[in-house]
Length: 437
Image (cartoon, rainbow, N blue to C red):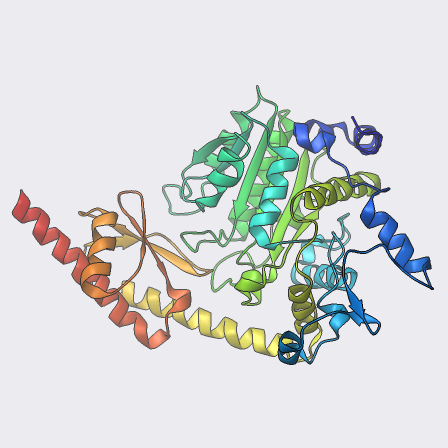
């Protein structure tokens, strides 16, 4: 094993051996090279005041070389904030500004020990980093049965982890904290579990309320006290889009420092929060550990980044940073929030109107981009195809009964027509099914 990796492992083992137990095989072997090209280049950037012949970019007239046809469209930005490689951990100022934003929006994080957020190539990459660091073949990934399909690819296919699902809702149509607790406690023999907490939930658009949030934290604590090491990952992709009756902050802060067997990991980003999907700017933040353990986890994260993408795109980080610093940012974001909330409220108003009879019910939703219909007598795939072929409408079929509808990409005045078309497609499929029988 590389000596740098061993030093990081020694620090983690000394300060919290439970965190070391959580690391995967790759997680234990990975490190960020201190004597490689990047570190030598960083040293040269500070001290080479005559010539710096270390970095693999081209320069011209003292600035990064660039094409005029590109710079003309980006003339508001200095070339040094666009064309140079960003540091593997991301632009330092962006990391600090994002941390400040996190603290402002999540009061429960105040006073807790957390790392400086590390920039990832959006949230999928952040989750992939978590999978590489903590998931080995056979490890348990605990998540509700209504979940984002990419979890299976990221943790199951890539890393060989076992996906342990529990029902998202209980009999009262609230978050199933007891199901989460039981699924975690069932991993006692393994001694380790990765818990994925995705709120607002994709695909249902559901976020638990404050009471259920406490029950989630208690479930994770109970598992830790029973001897299960829990990597508690808050996938906060749709953070801030909380429309009614829900938690208004991430559970990350409540999990920090809760128990030595709990490692809270926050994965979030500008992608959906700031409506910049194509920019691919995300963050990963560790919490609740000593400064030495957090520093070691950061170095291991940088090792994964260096070994995969080297660093995230620089222009996107610059654009996001400038937006976050703008005095108009908060007002513009509030304007978009109100539009999204209006769409969600209109969907609920339509579904509660009685207009569509009893052909479907819907799963509770109060946040995010989506909601899910539960079709009562026809299969979701048949309805999805009918909608495409006859009504020009795209939806997502999930399993036999569930149809995901993204109200985020619909104007409010289009929503009634949308659900009218979905209703007509359901009736069509019902009639065809009756005829065929």
